[in-house]
Image 1 (tube, rainbow, N blue to C red):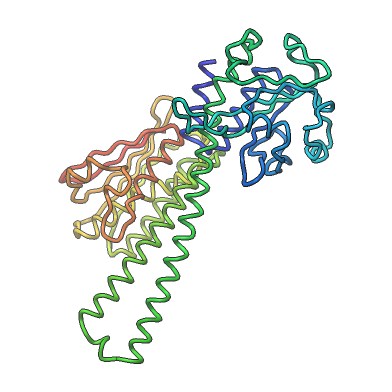
Image 2: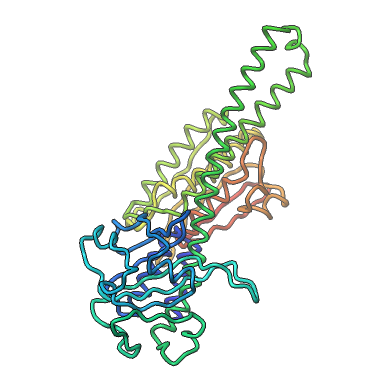
Length: 402
């Protein structure tokens, strides 16, 4: 059981909430010996399948006068023979072209519980069975309903069911994270659109002033105000765009890939970037261990991570006009893993910046979003790796272990 819980928590912290729901459901079905199941949560005036072992059911709505509704609203554990229960929502069986037999429905507790206050349940876990899985409950022609608290403390709550109740709070946490992610994504997306719209209106305002009072645009203070407004809006839009990028990190796409090929692409991109930034003559010293075998990676996200590191280095060397600017990118085997080193010969970082790397917004540079290195670390975390930095007057070195 401890291993089950650890796995679910790890998924909750390092993967998409949908993956945590999937694993939580699979664990509960396995523990209870079921044939399948679903997790339902509230969506407006309905309950909705948030996850199911039958993909066609995900997103399907169920009314509150259903078995799931009784579970959520009345805090009941229900065990029933579905064909005999009038509350069984037949639309589900039509959707999957199957007939539900025995069904266990248990409330998923809200994460907003307070002492002495019964918060509304977050949803319902439903597990299906082909035969009567709990003969000790003594089900007959009528559905069995138990108050959650009474059932958990009673003699009928067998070991299998007790284990399920340990998992349900983690399911509730996953559901809450899903809602927060969806809401924040939509809010930031709208904010980005508003910023882009505001940029257009600032341009229109400038044109109108130029037509009505052209002498005003000759005023240095007015010109500066327009420039500051334009810059602030562009930075806000870029921050929103970067945040949206950050939210997508929780859905990695792992596949067998060649790490050295990814690093070679990074080196080429950084070389091109150096010409744009004025770091003319940048040398990229690429040393790749040819014996590193293909491994499970999200190559696109890793490319983003190493490009972020290299971009910061190139910008610093360009800004400080580093003589003979050089980036060294090395891959090498490290036991069962791989070590990648990216080093520059730039001016190094101030201590206050080095001490707060990877913390959102703490290392924000002029015109930046403050999320670049946060994104880099999250990508490394999703690969089960680590990242460390060494910096001084002779340059900065990042060491990534995967």
